[in-house]
Figure 1 (cartoon, rainbow, N blue to C red):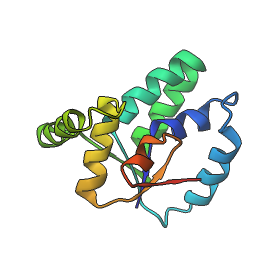
Figure 2 (cartoon, rainbow, N blue to C red; figure 1 turned 30 degrees about the vertical axis):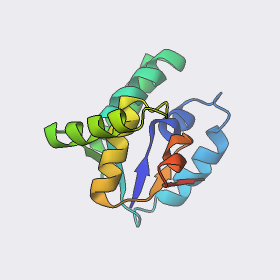
Figure 3 (cartoon, rainbow, N blue to C red; figure 1 turned 60 degrees about the vertical axis):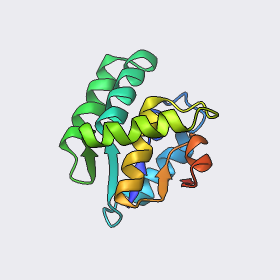
Length: 133
């Protein structure tokens, strides 16, 4: 299983993003559906908002619709129990500059025993997850 972070979604939808080409290549390799992909509703919120601001409304809607209808990517909802786990991570790691959204992603990764992340945020590496590409 692979977790898809905000940075990967942005790189795929923003042709000006310096990771656009590698993100496209990685997405092509993952599209066959053999590797289950997950993301979260918090990452969805972050990505659709940033795509809206950087690229445009039409692209944000295209992204949102495709993710919500996807049969390849499961969107995990951050419920109360994951919020508490995320908050505990946020409080514990005061020496790191994690966003709360990062912490919700970490909580999901720990809970689902996922160690690979399609994304570009080095915070995942500091929590011992493997980033690719």
